[in-house]
Amino acid sequence: MIELSGISRDFEVGSKPVHALRGITLSVADGEYLSIMGPSGSGKSTLLNIIGCLDRPSSGSYRLDGREVARLGERDLTLVRRHKIGFIFQAFHLVPRLTAAENVELPMVFAGIDRAERARRAEQVLSGVGLSERADHRPEQLSGGERQRVAIARAVVLGPSVLLADEPTGNLDRQSGREVLAVLEGMNANGLTLVVVTHDPDIGGRARRLVRLADGEIVEERSSLGAAGAAVSS
Amino acid sequence: MTAHDLTSFSARALRGHRLRSSLSLVGVAIGVTSVILLTSLGEGARLYVVGEFTTLGTNLLIIMPGKIETTGFAPVFGGAPHDLTLDDAEAVLRRVRQARRVAPVALGSAKARFGERARDVTVIGTTPDYLPIRQMHIQVGRYLPSGTFGQGGRVCVIGPKIHEELFGATNPLGEMLRLGDERYRVIGVTAPRGTSLGMNVDEFVTIPVAQAMRMFDQRSLFRLLVDVNNRDEMDAAKAAAVKVLVERHDNVDDVTVLTQDSVLSTFTRILAILTAVLAGIAAISLTVAGVGIMNVMLVSVSERTREIGLLKAIGASRRQVMAVFLVEAAILSTAGGLVGLATALAIARLAGALYPTFPIEAPRWAIVAAILVSISVGMIFGALPARRASRLDPVAALARR
Image (tube, rainbow over all chains, first blue to last red; front, top):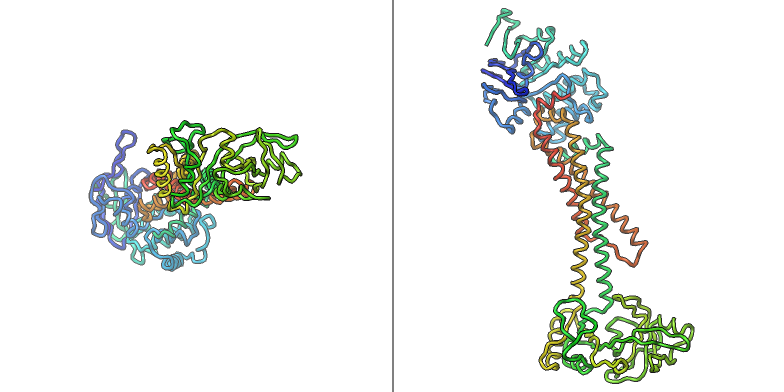
C-alpha cells in the first residue's frame, strides 16, 4: 500500500529553485495497476523515484505498507529498496560483464542469500519470464526485449511488494514492448502492485488506473472501471 | 554479502578492463620488488659483516691498552699509563677462570727477504693459541712451538701468499727468511684464509711474541685475545679480566675490552640504518604505485557510475558499494605485491648465483611487510574512490549518460 500525502520535491538548478513535484497526494492499493503519464519534465520520473525510495521528498508524507519512509536514513532506505521495491528502467541497467542469471542473482548477493538458494530462485524467476534458455548469456548476446525481461526477473527476485517501471518499453520495438508489458501485467495479475511511468498513451491506457502529471501536479486521475476524465487538482 | 561473493564480484569487474588493471598492478609490483631487493641488499651487507666477524673467532674478548670511551675500534697508537705486558697476559690466563686460551699479539711491519725477492710484510708476534683462536689452520709444517710465551727461538710461520711470492716453487720449510736484520727459520705455512676484516692473513708472517716485541722495540702488546669457554660467560670473563688488569696496573682502569658483540652491534646498527634508508627510498615507489591505483579506481568509478546507481537501486548499501571498490583496489595491490615478491625472490636467486660470496637474502620481515604494505596501499589509496562511489546519488547516477 502506497500512501503519498502532500509530497513536494524541490531542486536547486544553479541558484534557481525548481519545483519538480508540488503537493502530490496519491494512494495505490495492493495489487493495483497504475500508470503515470505526462509530458517530459512533468515530474513523473521524480515521483517514481520517490515511490521507489531512490529519492526523498522535500516535504510531505510517504507511507509504504503502513510505515513512514519519507524521513528514513540511508541505511533503512537501502533495506526498503532491497525488500519492498522492484525497479525497472528504460535503459535496462544490466551489468554487462555478468550473465543473465548472475544479473538476476545480484540483489540476492547484496541481501546475503547463499549461493545454492540464489541459483534456485534465479532459475525460477528466469523461467517465469520465459528466459530459462538464455540464463548463461551476457546482456550483449540478448535482444532488447530479452534484456528487459531479465531486468524484470531481477526486480522481482526478492519478492517486492511494489514493481516500478520507468518507461519500460521506451527502448524497445512494438513487438518486444508488448511482450515486456505482458510479463509485467502477468506479475500484476499475480497480485504484485504495478506502477508504470510512460508517455505512450497506448501503454498508459492499459492500466486500470491512470494519473496524469503536469508541472509537478496531478492534473487528471481516472479509473478505467469507473467514469473517465474527472480532472483533479491538488 | 559474503567475502567470497564480494571478491568474485570485484575480481570480475577488474577483468573487465584488463590492461588498466594490469598496468596498475605492475606499478605495485615494481614498488614491492624494489623494497624487497633493497632491504635484501642491506641485509646481505649485514650478514656479510657478521660472517666476517665470525671468522674472527667466536667468544672472543679483545683487550687493548688505553681507555676509549666509545665502543668501536681503538686507535692503533694510543698512549696508556701502563703497558699491556706479557706478564699481564699470563696473569689473565692464570686467574680468569672463564678463559680457555689467551693469545698476546704484537704487531709490526718489516721487510722480508728470501734470496733475491723481498717485500714488506705484516709481522705478528704471538703464541701457539693464536691459531685456534683465529680459527686458522696449518697447511704444511707446524705452527709456533709451545712454551714460546716469554721467549721462543727465531722461527716463523708464513702465510700462503708470502710462500708464493717469496719462495715460489721452493719448499720453504727449513729455509731462512730474513726479517729486517734478523734471520728466521720457516717452520710452517698457514692454510689460505683470505681477507678477514680488511687484513689479509695470508700475507702475515708470524713469529714468537717475545721476538716481535724485541725486534720492534715494543714494551706494550698490541692486543690480548682471550678465548672464553662459552658465550654465556662473556660478561663474567670480561669483568674478571678487567679486575686482574686493574689490580696489576696500580688500580688504574686503563684497558679497553671489546667483545665481538659490541663491535658487531656498532656495525649492525649502521647497517640497520642503511637498510631502513634503502627501504624508505623504495617505499616512495610504492607510494607512486598507490597513486596509480587511486587513479585507476577513480576512472573505474566514473565509468561505472550507472552501475553504482543500479546497485543502490536494487538494495546495495553504501557500505557494500564501498566494499566492492575497496576490495577491487586491494585485489590489485595484493596481486601486485605477490608478483613483486616473486620477481624480487627470482632476482635475488639470480644474483646469488652470479655472486656467491655476497649473501643477498630477503629478510623474512621484509617479505611479510611488503605484502601487508601492498594490501594497505590498495586500501588507503582505494578509500577515496570507494568513498566517492558509495556517496553517489542513485537517481543522478542512473541518469548519467
